[in-house]
Image (cartoon, rainbow, N blue to C red; front, side, top):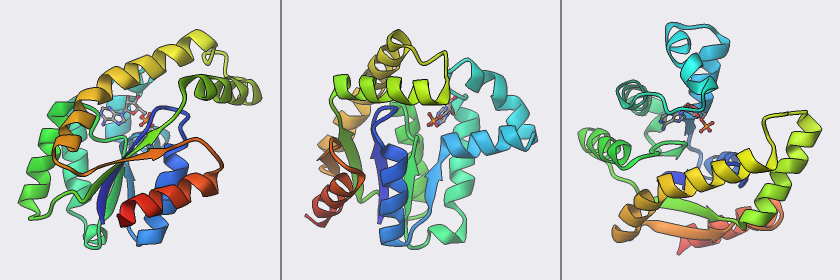
Length: 187
Ligand code: AMP
């Protein structure tokens, strides 16, 4: 199973991605998590990306695409992989196609978690309160949601055209959403 999971910040994408990856016995490849680990370990890559991440900007494609290419070339991806946070742009999607072509494989499914914006904003506000994150006010949360929708729209159209887009209702408990994803993937 070679797949992507897509969903806005706060949609439970990370949680669901990990569960589905366990089900299929495949690694999760989260570009955000890899970048954060490099920042925490103060690697060369971490030094390059830390300021960019702090500003909330996207890391340049040359860096991100190379990282994904290297990661996908590792042997643990033989049974498949679940990409989380990549691709984020059509250019990245095209680069991913090239990487997969080189490896002689292709994508099987793109799971999109569909969530209600209002519920999501309320959920994230609660989380911000618990974690004491001052930057997570209603306005920035709404803005991030809007930016996400604008960014991913062309990607979703691309994968829908290919017939591999799987839309799943992302509202409900972790188990409910997980069951829906598995049922949708079986089809
Ligand atoms: P995330 O955890 O997916 O929200 O990613 C956290 C940060 O890592 C983003 O705000 C970007 O700075 C960077 N990042 C993660 N994935 C990508 C990507 N596909 N392209 C560019 N930057 C990325």
